[in-house]
Image (cartoon, rainbow, N blue to C red; front, side, top):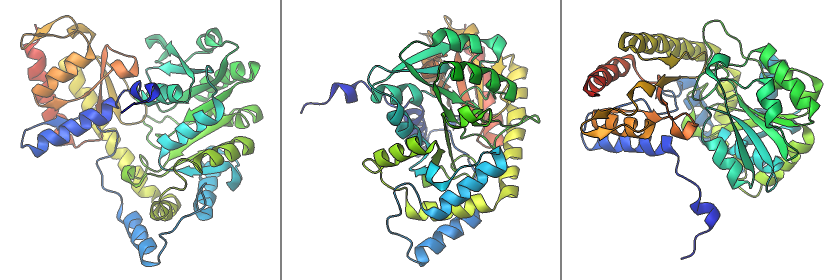
Length: 395
């Protein structure tokens, strides 16, 4: 059987692979604490589940319009107005099978073979692979610690060529938790407008922000940016609905029309029952969302303290639910007779000691590992006890 070179060149998702391994080890009765999953550990709130049951009871189980059911698009427009001061028409909203699908369709609509897409690193590794699948060329910019691991205007300016078509921003960031301020986005927007480019802005962690910080979308900066930004979002992280697979995007009408056309030949509409429940999720539940955010914040502070107690350095996350921990001091050393050559080795050997983490290499940050604090406090404490023992064995 012949397989395409394009398909063979796509690596598996490291996050999904390691998460699956954790589940397998647990099913085999082995003690493993996983800090891998990029999803809240809370169950979907009851009011959302009840809404899905209602959809089933009334027979809302057929196709919806490709771009999403009108009621959900109206609720999304209201969300953008209330939360971001952005006015969109329902025709500018495309509902998809998760934010990952929204992202792919956005890239596909903008990128031709050989076009360049600028991606600041560290970044969620799916960005790079989706750009490649669409025939584009990822241009990776290694951001610096002194800039909070965020893209600067000068770095952006220096990376732009005549093949550049778009910049992919993520705020709050996976994996660093970094947040771009209004002023930082305004400075980047000046460069974007100067070169007549577009931005794909992934804002899926928008509601998970700490220390009094506020979310600001680059689409808010100016009329130009609103007309040249595709905003990616969804219900998965905010409402603990990862398995329901509902993402959405807002885009200029011309782009939205093309994305809808593309989606009509890929996934078609998102699950009707999930869409119905998403209307309820986004119309209510502000107090539940805030309670989950506060719980994540408690866990963030706990994990920070445990890192400090072990002398581990890390990027202080301002948003999302990840801790990006620096393991540079351990590279080149050995444990269990095995040399730690980078984050893949560190993560692999640590798994043998009962803790699963995500290596930083796929994020273009091989001196880091990513730990999710979307796990219980008991697992955080127990996991760090194991990490402390593991570190003590490194020579």
